[in-house]
Amino acid sequence: MYADDVDFYSLSETKQRRLVHNKRVATTDQLLNELPKGKPAVRIFERSLDQLVLDKLEQGQYTIEELANHFSVQPADVRRILHKYRRRGSDDFTNENFKLNLLEERHGVIRGVDSDGRSLYYTLQTIPFFARVVDPTLMFSLLGLDEYVNTLPHIAEHIPGGKVTELDEDYAFVIGEYWNIDPEEVFEYLTEFDRAYIDTSLLPLPYIEDDEHYERVSRRFRQFEGVYRMFRGTSDHIQEVGEEFIGRIEQNQVGIATYQVMSIDFADFEWYVDQSGDNVLHNEIGDWIDQIARSLHPDEPTTDIDDSTEDTEINLRDEIQLILSEKRRTPAEIYEELPRDIQLGTDQSEVKAVLERLANTGVISKKNEESVFQYFQRQGKTWE
Image (cartoon, rainbow, N blue to C red; front, top):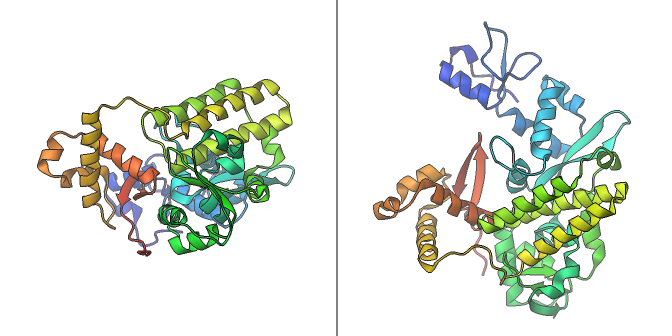
């Protein structure tokens, strides 16, 4: 847990500040937010407290007090971390959606799952294997997308379990790459089900008729009922989540994880309404889900991009993919490796935007290292 080989006070002030900024330094009982006065005894965590707390939540269910005691910090330090990753929408200061980041990095979200009558127990609920393979957007499990399948183009109406198609092979390769699962394992599991495929703006998606599988995923993500009694769900909150999602679509910054976080947020709204009985909110949620379902249509217009702009982005994307390897790089580092003629007509923000789109659809991978995203091409197995 600790970097015992590092003497904090022997480091330069710049390195000390970086460690404090990255939430890696604590006194005997609390996390430091600024350099300490004097030279009190300090501990240096091997990684940020954020990451250590998330590691712990992947292992089980804990209250805020239990996590604070485990890391010898104040409950407020832990509460801030949980709030950061549980809040809906983007952060007001950084404009980052940390819940979305968590889904991209750990394929899960923090949920309140139980209570001892006084404190709430939290865990990091990861996306189960069935959903990863059969419902990667979580829209069938959490938002009832099956009610909208007739509004989307069908690629295959019915494929019986045990029969295999080229469509299954293509889908298994893409989804296996996204989750870092052997495509053959995806293929074997998927083809056990009677299934159909719809075409979407994201990728072809399978769906099955057996609702129980989707319901199990829904039960897994639904939080302890006490959470929804404390839940703040208003028309403004619903609009904020919906508009952020539509904004990402319009900016062409939407991927599998974007649909996951949107599905979870709107499912929380629906579960809140189940308890509150607010039918006005129920209708508003339904209107947004209608709009989100329409966004999946492959012919749904998003932004107006002229042909020259599209060609420029395709060229930039191809150059970036030639550079990427298993070595992790920041957008700035990738920009520096671009050919000179491409650099002259490209801004670093455009490089980052292309990297985000590639990562969102699982073409490449990204990793958050001390609040800096690095991108790389994962070398998976070749499946023939």
